[in-house]
Length: 373
Length: 258
Image (cartoon, rainbow over the protein chains, first blue to last red):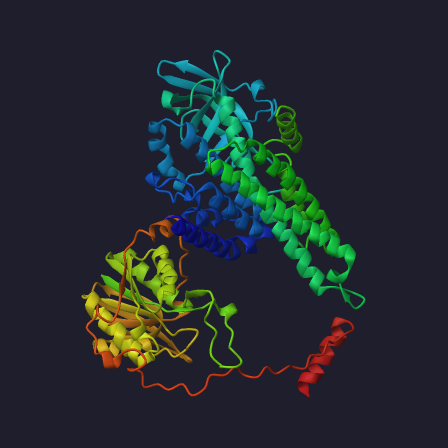
């Protein structure tokens, strides 16, 4: 069985590489310039079953484990980080439904996760890392809940059709509720015009007295923050994988250029100042890969992974921005040009110093853990 | 419809090396992949099955390591696979291979359509498909770039030849060899990758098939390979035309005209 899993993971990763090389990488620059996925591209992702990578077989999925899925996003991000982040948002949301969802909710919704994007949303205008200050309300009405509020900066907001939203109940406790775009009272708000990961839609949803059955509550009332934090942890591992892919792309560009370009008669890579940069990018890429793999392995072993997940995203996001800067310097004038993708890779990586908790918040969590151990 | 796609595992194109001493292809530790034209054949089979129903069976002959290519065919969506694997089959030329495959096809039974890629990219003979058609005594269409099922029993294939095309209509059962122009092979999908491990793969040796033992393997192969060699690498003279574009183009044109 173990051998079979390894073989299957190898086949998946080869398939993702082929898909990325053929379908995503050639459009990478266009996606950034257009600020959206070209028509039909997302359909290809759906039609080739990529939404179902982690979904259990009972719901029509492929049931690959989290480490295998993370590696898939790593490979995809070498060609295009936006699509990898779109899948990251979907996978982390499914994890919460699988862990906390009522069986009726799973049976009703998870089969559609093969072709519909699921999103997780906590942030409101009051702040992303301050969930206690949210104003979205969940009011009990008989056996149902009535959800009202406004959520912003949702990864895949507008593209996703199903949303898990954090809301406050009447007794000021937190809960996470699943709402569907087809429910009366649901509407989309504005899409953000972000400077990086420009293919990944990030948008707003407005919920006006959406009525959901009681089993649309994930876990119990009062578990909302725990579920939100768990979603963050799951996302941070996958973001580490995406950041590894971005650094691999940065490294490739710097290495290729340093082999082809000469300073006088010396190839650039023979210059110590260039070697310094290429080595640093390679080390940072390797470190981030080890971090996300370790985080995923802890999760698979049902051990605590929040700390490693925070380290992965804190280290990986800053490393990827800095690696991009170093790669840019290797290419000098060309690196500063939009002709090469480095500038957009830096903008893409920069998003992950913010999304799923800022680096400062990661470092706060890491420090607290160290102080209290 | 029962469709069998015959595939060959070939070395991945960028990892092919020739041993300079023996002049043989180095196959040890070389990553094997499905012959690219055979993926077009699998795609054609899956498309017909999706339209008309039935099953798609992948058939190949080779060592255990071919299992990975069978698995790839199943992960594209084929229903089951058969591997002909035995030392007795080793060293077979196209004639012995064609004979062995045709006997395996008879054992599979009631096959409506046998598809091949037009040739393998390592040996490049393109002979096995036509040989199988001959042994089965069924019609064949080779080098097909368009394929249309008229009904469950009739098929029209358009052959792409040097400077011309030819449409051929056949009544099934038949053998068809396909070109890359026919279609774009689908990707394996995550779900199909996992289910490929649950699908049935039969491994048959010389005892499982009705065979004349003198017609298989090395003994059944009249082809004699006298020598395989890597052509000498000839360096080409390269000249860089410096200066501005206009001057460089003028100089280039001057050199071409000379």
